Length: 124
Image (cartoon, rainbow, N blue to C red):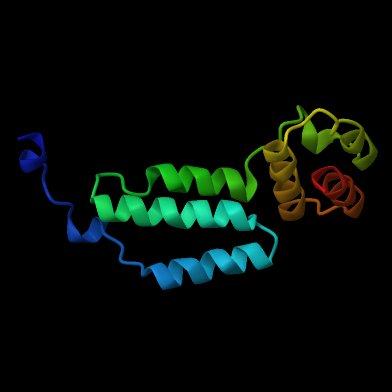
């Protein structure tokens, strides 16, 4: 009964995006190093699944995930105030997701080769 009482979204609130276009945009983000291939696949699958369900707030979960993947705050307190050497020293003990988040954040912001190389060594 509750599903029947839900109002249809207003046309102005709808966005039509084909799976192919969505995949193309996410693939470009992967090529630019903004998102990992596995995170991209998970994001596309979540968006398509939610779109098929027709639920209200279709994109809220995947958009939050995309924001985290694309540049959420790194797991190191005071990250922006640290030198590259200080960041490299604090990478030990971080899990893979935290390392990927640091890599993404670093690429989008300071883009320091020293930090990126240290993260890549730990991800390998």
